Amino acid sequence: MNIRYRVKLDDEERALLSELLSRGHAPVRRVKRAQILLAADRGLTDETIASSLGVGTATVSRTKRRCVEAGVEAALSEAPRVGAMRKLSGAQQALLVATACTNPPAGRARWTLELLAGRLVALTTHTSLSRETVRRCLHEQDLKPWLRKMWCIPTLDAHYIARMEDVLELYAQPPDDDCPVVCFDEAPVQLVAESRTPVPVARGRAARIDYEYERRGTANLFVHFDPARGWRHVKVTQARAGSDFAQCMRELVDVHYPRARTIHVVLDNLSTHSEAALYQCLPPAEARRVLRRIELHYTPKHASWLNQVEIEIGVLRQQCLDRRIATREMLNAEVQTWAKARNAERATIRWYFTCERARQKMAHAYPDIPATSAARAA
Image 1 (cartoon, rainbow, N blue to C red):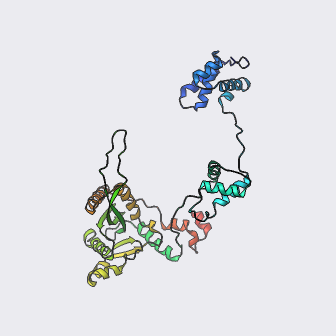
Image 2: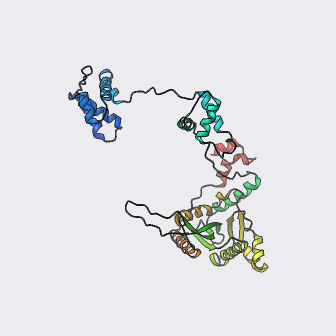
Image 3: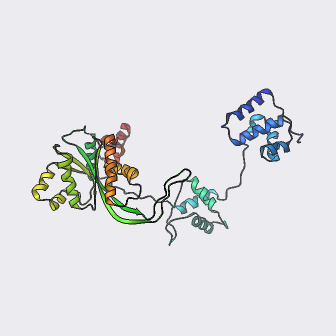
């Protein structure tokens, strides 16, 4: 028994430690120290305390010493730890960051931890560096040179602004049955069949599918979405040619909105999405009749996010298409069931991006709107 450090607690200290143990959410190390102090107060030896609590005798002795010298709270708290010296100096860390931001070596697609460690060894006096040393330094700088993200960078010119505001103005208009706004786009789908029968989910076991599959070709989905009505229609086709687009526009006029005066269609810049496609695939009088009833509104290039149907297609992929579907007939049955349920719920999208917000966010693209006034309006 360590007679140098004897722990004698008063009633208030015992009550404090007992309350700490009864909470059930204190850190494990703090709980262990409280148990050590209470056991030492009862006169147990260091060896007995260490054996019963599953700690070392050094931990028991250290906790008792801190209690005697600095008090109960100091004994419960974590003592500051010096730790080992950093392997990389400030200049070497800066060199590592600068190297990670350069192009990778010839023949390699990206920097890895091993490559960066080897390059730093070649550039400094270190004889070796571990992956963990490099990883920790990059983590502190929030740098991941092996990751890549792809996106389209639009040109915010007057053409972009004009098309964007045209679409945003449509979204801001109150619902009008005579002039509905319909967002339109298509989505490719790969038809895939199971090569082996999947194993269903069971208690304690996830569902299992074989990694092998059979390709059965592709299909295309034409998706119409009316955010004001909370209505969508999905048409399954084999391709997305101009004739398919022309047929979709004719159905939009004759089947889905036969009483509407003008149907505003929001769509992207695909080559088949044009008035010319109707004249190429329909008799001239028929093409003219359909075009008199619709008005096409194109999103800017690299700005498909302005088309609300893109969000609806994302929901469709997540809720319905995230599995293997073997045939076009099965695909059609599944998407129609999904669309029917969504239409019954009148599920729609809350769109908050308006022309006013666009002018605030993109003030640099509007030469007549000073940045200071736009920031003040925000």
